[in-house]
Length: 358
Image (cartoon, rainbow, N blue to C red; front, side, top):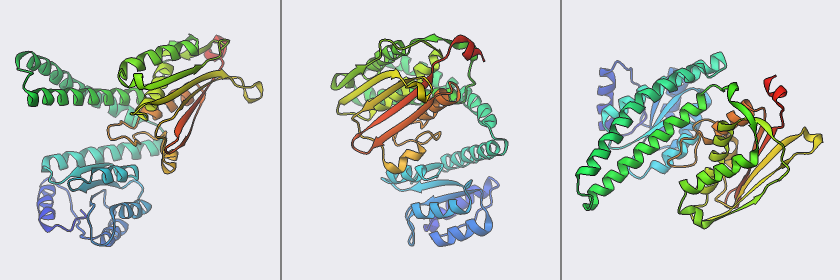
């Protein structure tokens, strides 16, 4: 535990020892780095406000020593933005002061479980443990979510919604239930095995039409402020695709474009066929004039759980990559510049039924 507040260290130390954990403490960054180098801890609780080094530098130095080291960032009020930046840099979770011990213990347990799964994945070169973990997680989370949603519906019918505080509280609960339900579904989509039997002959322009109709309902108000232009090849050939998966990939890309333009903007969607010299494929391009992506974030775009959004799951583009590249033998590339917009280019091979079956 890296923290220069002796009272917090004492409190956490007592709780962790009760749970059977061995605790090493450090009150500055340099000592913490030495402990990581010589004592090989499984997990580090890292306070952001230390006298000698900033949290980002400490995390970088520790991960250079042990890339599998689990780090939970402990931040004071208002430090959430910095904590999220540190999660992008490799921290696994963050917790805000003042925190409840039970919440801290749960975070430690969950992070160590996920760490073990990642190590096993590296060892065996696949997603085996995560594929087992997420369906179990989904089952454990979905049941109470359904119960919460059902109870909330009953409460809404029986209380006075003219009470502003109550109405706002119900709205928050509802939004959080939907957010968590969406995250669980994203996890399942990411680890789900492909289903070859669901490949059908599909017309990409039709898939795009359905996707953008769904988007107009999801972003009902924002749709009025975003101009969508289509440049679709009317002679686009049919190809064998997993229809639902390709629809999901396009939906994720379009949602990202809309979310990058909260004040409105433009989205251009193009389709065409690549030249024969490049290996004949259908090319789909989404070009928006949104906020764009920072240069340092570009290399992480397809990494699972990487996100630049406060409420993102970090699985949208990872799912797209899995669907397009791994399950359809296609390509997906992103070109972006911060403040100037993003272009996502998808290429899907043109396949006959015979080629799909082989």
